[in-house]
Image (cartoon, rainbow, N blue to C red; front, side):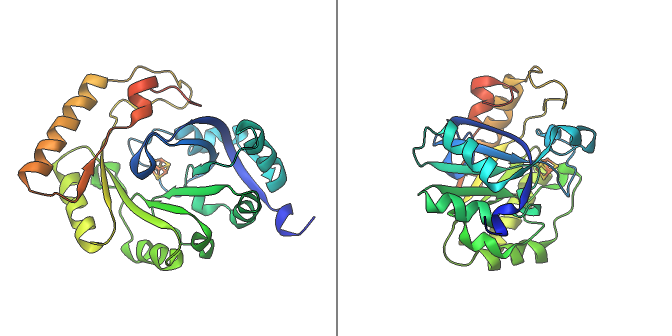
Length: 245
Ligand code: SF4
């Protein structure tokens, strides 16, 4: 076994096949590899079980071969696009996993807030950068964000995805999109009823989310922001806060 394959990755959960519920790949069948740990702590994080260190005992250091065996089992050995999510998957050593999967003809899409740049971003097939707006309580380091784009280079398909809760978030999204006019922009109404980490089936306020979706569509159309795409979190509409779907 090569040294790279001996790398261990901190995994919170692996599940699927299901559909990608958000952004550029919405509706696409996928297997999720959710890594544990995040350098952010957003006020409305909907995956706290993969962020909060109280749940660290549920994160397992897994070898690339063990992760890969599970992905292949879940996908029935048929190549698909693997979604690398978190937490912040960028803080994990994922290059050997990408190499292993590409050998078998799989593709990889990774979503990150853009706070940590890695040279292996260039090996991804899709990189979704999701900077966090003011309602998250986090501050964007735009130089780190720019480094992520530079590291990715030309190969991966790139997209900007921004969660919106209020007017300040909307203005932030407009400014972010203006900084990177060549990136396709996906706007997503925030879920103000995210699951507490110990209760993955907590009730979700779909009516409230749909109200915010309509508000967001009005904002975009009134502003003539015709490059933006407004999408819901499809998995939340279908399954609420349920985990592993
Ligand atoms: S960056 Fe994502 S995973 Fe990390 S705390 Fe924020 S919403 Fe949660």
